[in-house]
Image (cartoon, rainbow, N blue to C red; front, top):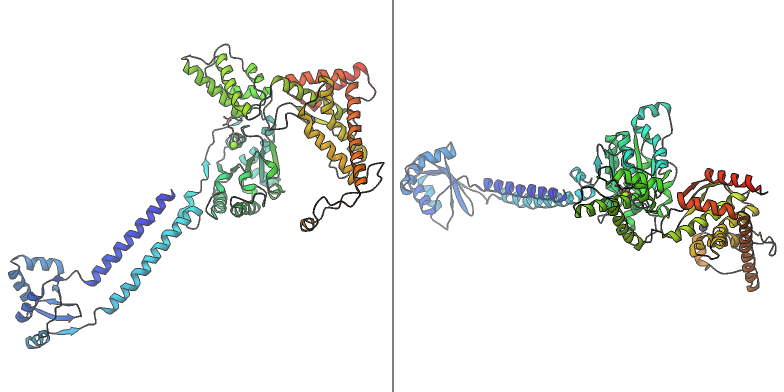
Length: 630
Ligand code: ADP
Ligand code: MG
Ligand code: ZN
């Protein structure tokens, strides 16, 4: 597109020059009959010319009928008179190049011809010599402005086409095409309702979120989900990828954002979708390289467009990212991307459903069992599963089969797994077992202690590198203060994972590293900041957080206390951690059977909701009525 525009303006430019040249020709008089000087001399003698204009370089004037007659004779052209009449309509003009001829004036006087001298069309040449360079400059300017304009998508309106806003009037994707993300779909229902009938919401004065951020690992269907929202609501889908914003040309990103929002205004109700938001939304000042200023401009433009945007018009801004932690905090403030929707790796059932979707158009052999396939692909995301189906179909085709059979799927899984294993995303069964016990340990300790938040969900579906499973606790209320007991309980929960590994395997793994780190962190804060250690008393050993510029003046790590105190602090920290460990061990030893049972269920189902877990615990409690069960 840009090249086209540039070429177009180049044509304009050439045409302009041509016009100038023609104009110049017109003024310099090619529309006069050129005759040579000897003929002119004769014509003067014959009185075939009149009204002469003599300039430094040439002589022009009127060609009288007598002159034409003479000329047609000399040129042996009987039709000359007719031709000249055709050309000039009225009396023909002539022009001849002047030669040094001292006797000419005398001759003219003799013949009584009218003549006058001009100073070489000064006004014309000077005008032209002024106009031509000016026009040339203007032309060049226009040319380059266009070029920049096309890049910036706005300096000149032609530039609009360059912005890679990807628009679909109908995405033709619905929730039927997305599986394993039911929770996210549920949360998006409200948005869809709003997009369907913005007027209804306007009338009610309902509060509709402006920005919805879809967060989740790569390949889990974030983009797909956003398109499905547009498809479900039947509204246009305008999308732009974050990486498109970050361009070399300064101002391009910002202009694209502006363009995107302008287009959205016209198309409302619609969805604006910014994929890979992290590419633009990286916290300002986070990366010193790769044109931070340009990204910052783009980000600022995005923020101001979002602020100036009226949701009631029916435009919802969606964004996707797999790295929410690096986003600029300004992006997730209220009124911007304040609604977050998690799209996690699919569970066993989710994977089966995704496989169902992707095998809809594939001819399956009778032996294909999607449930078995789902069980074989823990940790895989929708994109991986789509890949497996595709790969299996290719394998079957290569073997000239009429249907895709189980062995093709098995082979495809092996191939995809081999690819993923390199990227550290798939667990082997042994690892899965360890993770199941570990997470169960966290969950049981959390449920056993009165002050901790109830368990929301336990999962052994790996997410990202490092975290192999997770136990999610939801706080029942917002917390500003935490008591010592609460902190200690929290540490015990963190130790629960490791203790469960110890009990089950008589062995420990590296999986608890993060837990230990966090537990130690709490212990250190308790001793150093909150004065919660009995031995050291209500003292704080941590300097208050100072503004950054003061911090740099005072190097971190400067201690205001002695080596002996430092040692004591270390001892207190490790005592607290060890106590948490002992508590977790006590709790889990009392619940050995429950630990086994829950871990096995988790191994099988991969995800346990908090309520399911509690039902389990209640049953166990009824059986052995141990006193500190809830
Ligand atoms: P993301 O944007 O999260 O990286 P995409 O939406 O680009 O993932 O997913 C890539 C492809 O993988 C989709 O086009 C779709 O074919 C498949 N896919 C991913 N997640 C799902 C899902 N939950 N249900 C069905 N297909 C999925
Ligand atoms: Mg995507
Ligand atoms: Zn853990």
